[in-house]
Image (cartoon, rainbow, N blue to C red; front, side, top):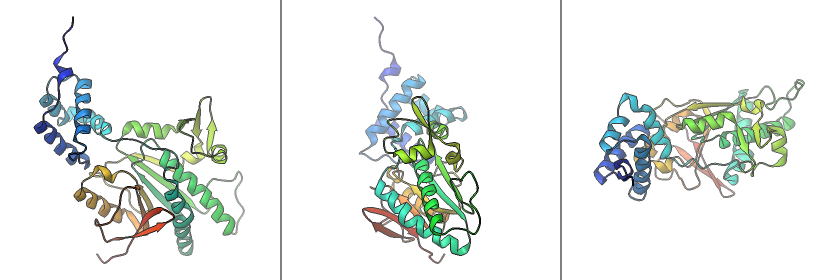
Length: 303
């Protein structure tokens, strides 16, 4: 009878977990307090087995080596819960489409600025940026009906009526999630929240999946970003960063909010998760609360 290998019996000690906590925090800002330390221990134990290393020290040396960059990314991906769906948190999306987007479009038309830029930070497998793109297209079509421009609509009718130009940036630190998002093919179960009209307009029906139409996909730019270390996209009108700050401690949350402030255009808006708040972290945003949904608008404060 075969005896279990040492690899299957490795469980990192408290001191080793603290060492790993520091490395993860330095790399991406994720902080694991006492309530979530068991989750970190379980995920690291799993990666030790996958890599077939016989000591935690060997694994840590791998993570901190030049050759270990791929494994470090794999570990960080395993530490995030990529739970997402189309049109998640509908009250917030209704606030985005019916109130905030309307205000932004009106303000831009006065300035003859026809460019709309929305960033989905932490886009996971793509359902959020595609949902935002659909809501933007619908909102622009309705806005155009009420504010027609003095020229004929091109044929076939574009998803974004001219002279408007819309761009959705979608970023994540999971390469696997970004690959799924770029492919843009979703099962019937994933499409549960997408109504019939939206399926017809924005998706092609395949044998067992729905594929995002190229015209909608062309509005979205997918990219890898680490919110802690990377240069972040600038000149955004609206940023969605939902259920990401829950991984950070207060100091890192404050740094991230400060980054978002500088990534937004004057008067821009920030959406965070339902269980997240900017209260006590910054005085550079004002809270907007309407119909059980919350957003934050950048205030123009003296530098």
